[in-house]
Length: 397
Image (tube, rainbow, N blue to C red; front, side, top):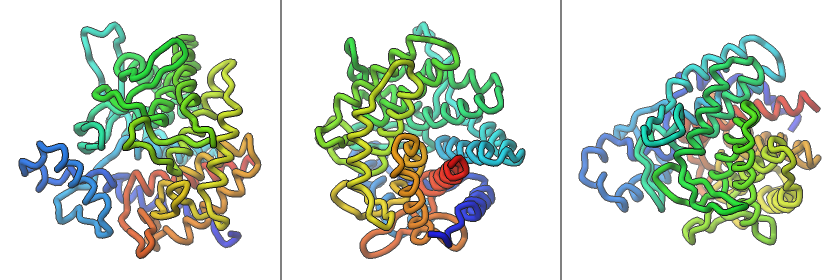
């Protein structure tokens, strides 16, 4: 472990991504294929799902042959900005502030203004993905306003506002909160609970997505003292807490086809609850975090830091499991001293096993082979953010 230099690894990865203009392929960009889009199969739900999964799961990168171009991904840009904001907090070097602000300018260009003259809630903004996305449950065309990239963009602008005080960034956070309030479906809503949907087009019940919506609202409430946003955020947190299993785990969502328990979605849920407890006045969920954290730490990592994919299955070892774990562990270390040492082990294992000599990180380590495709958001942006958070956490310690 002592031979791993996290800072030089960060610098080399940032240089690689900057040379790529922070654009690249994505595991879910299969439907961007010009060949597929020229086919009548694009109108079939089953064909879209099968084609996307074929491209995603292939051990060989089929994208050049399928005429899929590299692209800018809003969530990826938000992660790059969050990484540089973290580096600025750790160093106060002006180049990190400049990099973060330049990345936020790119991110600002990706926003989706939402206009609905029938809605009483005006000046709403969201972010989406740069590809059509067919899930098992619903279809979201390219550019559909989606809570996950919106939440990460809001987090980046919120952290920037706290550091630099730029009013434009505060306004974007407020505009994303209006999107959550006014456009996302409320697939559950009662006196004590809310579950926000993934997009305005669906009514799914996905715990981490709903909690990300709550984070947007809670950050906005801090900036405009709107108690209504705090109340909505707490209801979303209550819904997720009430769905926690007795052993401390959360499945991905409420449908039978979403009943798996994986590493990075567990990390997302825990991190959101931890943040919401800090953001919402008077809200506590210590027991849910304790149970969830114990289950996660005891079931998702091998002794050497290997991040398992599922609670009962190690493979495929995914770069997303590693990087999301490091981010969550660095923040959760505030409440559990087991977390930061494990974050270092996970990061060290990842660098030794998933890093290319060119500086980027591989997609997956499977039983028989390593899938070495370079993904700008899923692999590199997330790993850069994880390394930045780890360096910051170690400097604070």
